[in-house]
Image (cartoon, rainbow, N blue to C red; front, top):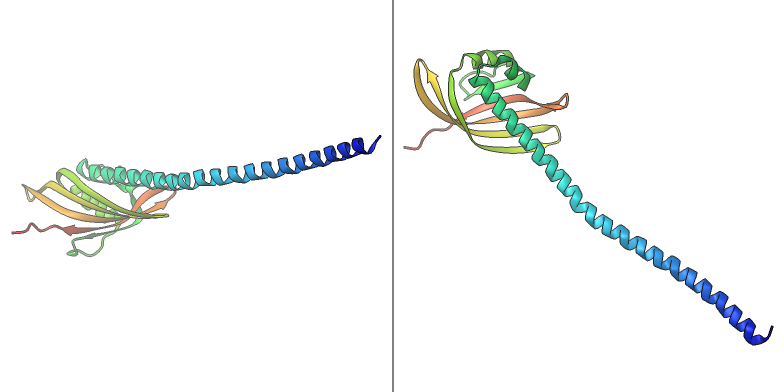
Length: 178
């Protein structure tokens, strides 16, 4: 072999070595770019999953609020007892002392709710606890006479046994401005 052939063969080896090194570097750059793109796609998706989870919990709690009102209107003791936690506490407008689950259910079964409208729900949900502000108006029968009422219930829920349970409620009467 002459010097020219040796140089050509040696430069071919170096060229192949350079090509392999450049290929590895190029693949590494592509992998890095792919990771960055996947990360940028995953971050908003994680937020959407969290938002979707929050919206699902809001819908679930809104449905429970409706079931709660329906159980009172329909005098459905079993449904109401399932919604309320065993250690439930109810406060009615501050005039009565706090009451237990059983006393509150007994009161609700005797309450004459003709109709109701949930006007607005505001919620704050964190982990296993939720606070729901229920703005409502009702038609009720009190001492034989039909009358209207409006107010705000502040309901506290806890997630136990893989479901939301009402832990407490407090009522705030809304007084019409004169």
